[in-house]
Length: 302
Image (cartoon, rainbow, N blue to C red; front, side):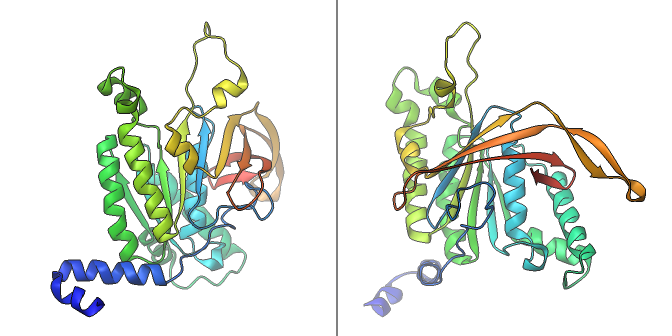
């Protein structure tokens, strides 16, 4: 039956079909250990799960994405996982210079600890970046088309295990304005994106991390902490999320850092906190609190 089908289909369709079969047969890297300090013990994201990073602007969400991205594309000798990543940039906020700086710092740290990194610094850095595919979207319609395109990448790249979306809420207000007073029309495109993403999660067993901007309420509007932390996106998206990282910003704190000449000095750094709630279907709900600060070398956990 398969041979008959291959004879009927065109060459591009055959290539896509064979890639799809191979991608499904070959297991993708599980990312439960992508960052143990963020998730409950043994509670990291499994195959086909979604992590939402929720918080207001300036709470470290994008820096966390850079941290996770670097963890994936770095070689194992530098503490990485050596898997491919797709970064869907809907806010046009991806800072490649910042990303390269973090990768370079981590590679230098690995070399300083005598970790055997094959190749020159530039060659290893280029190899890391070759594992990254960046896609920009300027509307929810483009996001939907991107997810359709993503299936081709997933079928041809079995090493692709992580999709990062920054952010899933980027077109919320635009879609509301274009759809008028009809709530179903306001949510139509995001619902379609969620439906397609759910199929990709099921068929290709990838892991998705997506940021979501919290809505700032006016001072005159009464609200509680639970109100501001509640997701406002469509119900299908809320049902798709299995881990939620609630990001916030604390007061700056003093930290002891290594200075030139081997001396120690105190520096004041902004501290960010993450409250993780994990509720995958196969396990009971679990929680984890963590804190981190941001340096030139990326995220540092406290």
